[in-house]
Image (cartoon, rainbow, N blue to C red):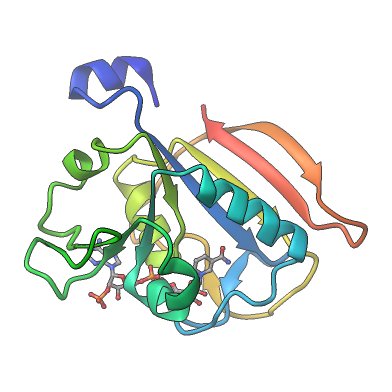
Length: 182
Ligand SMILES: NC(=O)c1ccc[n+]([C@@H]2O[C@H](COP(=O)([O-])OP(=O)(O)OC[C@H]3O[C@@H](n4cnc5c(N)ncnc54)[C@H](OP(=O)(O)O)[C@@H]3O)[C@@H](O)[C@H]2O)c1
């Protein structure tokens, strides 16, 4: 978070939005909207679970939520969907939010550590609205040849990040890159 921007826009300086992403070598996060992320390495899954355990809330789009209902059911989740007018609390763990009508920043400010779990539309919403503080990007050594990009914006986004650390997760060469907003 840029400090001066935090002051001028009155952000909660403690709120941190971290995108957690796995991509192929060709930068794809899945084949299509209904593709379950069963192609990532066990080491990346361990990292993901550790990150989610440390997060106050997980934000996912409705498509991703539907592909991972069971693993996400035990998490505190904000699910983005246009199926609600503004927002609707379904249970203590499940909060449906329409990011087109709700005051997303105000909702997010009630948390400290926020894990943005995708997919493309959701990562793109956070990028376009300048809400991404950092990206944990695991590159898995495989190629899909087609599929969903990490971001898909109609706008020209010029967001710059700084590489904070790199880690090789296993012998086959899954690489975990940690970028923070420059
Ligand atoms: N490799 C990875 O790290 C990773 C991580 C997560 C997901 N994925 C993959 O990503 C794919 C799904 O991505 P996706 O882009 O199709 O979908 P998505 O972002 O998961 O969900 C899209 C849906 O979320 C809702 N939504 C998104 N932005 C919104 C906004 N600003 N306001 C209100 N509602 C909003 C809409 O739901 P409604 O239709 O209900 O209105 C929209 O149809 C799957 O293949 C999944 O496996 C990969």
